[in-house]
Image (tube, rainbow, N blue to C red):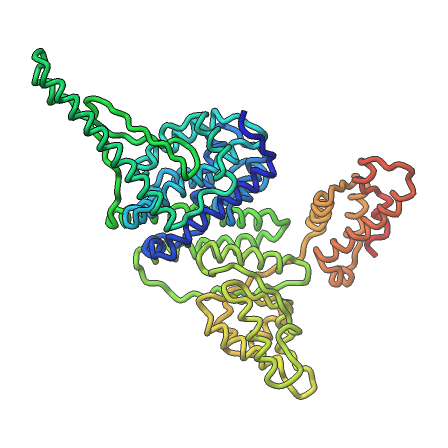
Length: 576
């Protein structure tokens, strides 16, 4: 039996081996091997490692036509980054599987670079890298005490794909079987991988070559002796001598670094197989191909992320005109990108926006989603979201306001700066000093200075926002997209309330919902003006939950159904 490890131990072992791979990559990066590939791929070497390791691991459950929860957890925790956007639950996206398949089908650039270093420095980094990668895979394959039969088949299929890029010292890996897996998982290197040491690696390679040379000399002597005996045999047919050809094939068996057993296999009439040693030109070509594959992977990830964000927007209750406006904006940006690819002329375009409407109509929520959309469309580099208001921009003394505005803008670079109730900046406080105007002047300048990686969205009441834009000519020219957020209808507010209940595992009875609808219908225009739309309905929900708690607490042993149910009594008096 394979040595027993708990799942927690296997998770820890995989992380240790991953850290060893990071160290191997650091060796390559420090010595300049990643400089050219990075220019082409636009990935750091650690990002390239994470993408390759995740792809290698993900395709194993795909190969088995099943994925356990432990395997999913393993995929998410081993690497530092979730390069394939694997969700914590639900089915694995087809896009993720397609990305993984493309990655494994592409030339393994990291292995190639390890081989190139080995050729130049007479080291065995490629062997150590591959062995350590296998350790991570085996930790996943043996989760829940699984047997290694499927793992052996998968590894064989994998090495059939990448064998052209493996140096001669690794050819023995094609002979992987269950005995090999057993020896490997029981070896001293399984728990942390093969840590590369330049001096020790060269010494090991030198020792190995010396042993190979001695074996070759011994075989040559034996061959000479046999030929001499054959010449003395009168019945020997001389023409058969040309058919004898000796191949020396090294077979390395698992063991400690100091005890590597080498056996020379003597075969007849088999041509020797050349080692694959890649030139720098071949590495560059492979990197170029990998770059194209990486770009396809990136584009697929961006498309999937954009689709997810648009679904999040479209799943919001109400706001139909807002959704249409955002879809039109996305379409416009996509077409601009197409024209740009064909070097067609482009008109200048501002991405800043004005959100108008009453409080609680979803302006902040939509602005957060827009930050992500702009990032996936390539408009913004980070997609971060910074929310502020007058208090966050205006100081009480001359000169300090500009500093506060600059500080907030610095935080928002690469994303969206959302200024709620922006009209208050243009309102005079009646005390003589107009610090709001100073904030606006500073903001306009900083918007121009950072126009390529900053988007500002200002929000507030419709009429007040018109006055705000008139307060500075620079605002009018920069804010030319207006999105109106209309008040929610009573039915939409009711749907929002039901949605809040579902998120809290609570369900309204029919008579409870009907009474809430009645209270909304009976609200006067004045009350509705101060109700606050979705904010108001959230306040109502909190009151309902409080009423339910007061009702439930006196029950001797409330059932799960009673804990989840909102009744008519709970909603009484929650809207006044």
